Length: 119
Ligand code: HEC
Image 1 (spheres, protein in one colour):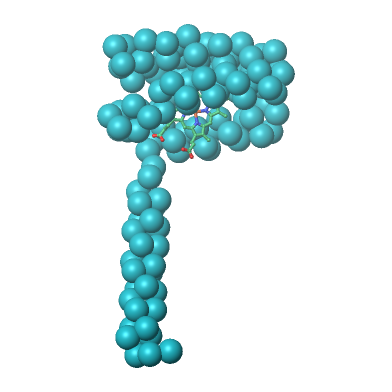
Image 2: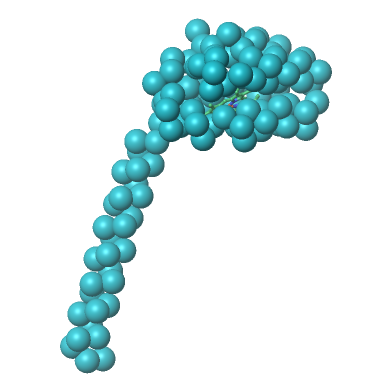
């Protein structure tokens, strides 16, 4: 290996390490009160198969619309999710969660991350 090659390899490592650091800190900051609530409350109830709890959480979520204009179907999606939790069909529950995530997660993350979660 020539010395300039070795330098190039060394530089590549450095760039890689810096990139890793950037990714790690971005992930550490990628959080919000709503995301914490989703993970701690919603996922916990869902994983435990506690459908009554999940239904109650989704009904609470229906009352926590971040913004009526940007999220016109938030309450509807949440209620649908509550109904599917009551029904207890896992596929339906997952589909109901996904509709809201597909529709609203992006804009929520862009503009509404400080929204407090349901109480
Ligand atoms: C009415 C909308 C809505 C419904 C219904 C909904 N969510 Fe969410 N969920 C969100 C939003 C908005 C975020 C993004 C929060 C953030 O990242 O700041 C989110 C984020 C999450 C996350 C974090 C994912 C990540 O980015 O790592 C999990 C896990 C999650 N939801 C689980 C669920 C489950 C399970 C259900 C169904 C039982 C559900 N959610 C139903 C709106 C919803």
